[in-house]
Image (cartoon, rainbow, N blue to C red; front, side, top):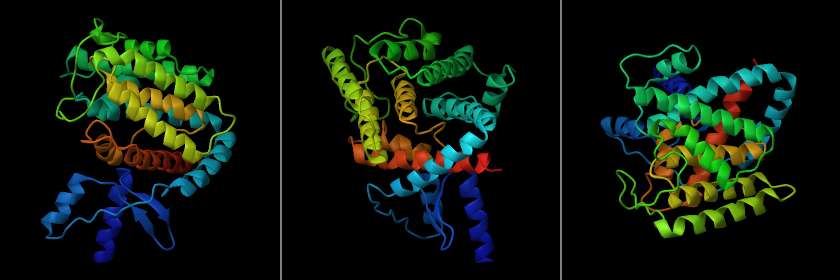
Length: 305
């Protein structure tokens, strides 16, 4: 009975991408933090223990899966392109659900894939979904053409993503803002935004100019880049979705495929970013490793079918 329950639980976690299998024999899995599972454990009178992970916990596995991905992609590029489209829609849904958009994944698929307008949602909710897909398409087009990030391209992505709020789309904020639900989250003063953006982009240009970066160096910089931009918080709204988009641009430019933040990792991701009481680039790095490895394992499994 226990083995049946464990098998069922593992299947559920796998469906939600809430586990990462590091080994089959012996079975070794890691489960990202999840408050539902924590509460479930508490319900049965147990205490949830949090493992302390190494900063390079997943790097070897990422390298292995990345090598496998490159081989599988060459063998079946058309299928790879179809998977990109499929998981891009999931990313639109997952990314905007963090920001409070109520449109469900099935309705997001109907809207973006089948052009079926869902009912019972406001026009702003619908336009928000459509606009974010357009921004992602622009980002993907830029990476395919090897266009680096610039202040202008970042403003363009934000302008496209936030077109349903045209008065502030693509414009640097001129007033103080704060993170809803997290008053401890530090954001740049208005007078410091341009300076900090210039410094960040200077570091970005230095990073991408390197002939070759290791996976560790890429993830170290990506975690810093993500956190720094989000803490600069240059816009009135839409900062977090723009941060995710330009971080994906950075990773894709370094040949690391990331198409989605899986459902089972969303809570871990939020707690590592705008939900964090204190900035911790190492914690975000760890979460990004899980996201990248999860993406690679899912895509590789699909490509090998």
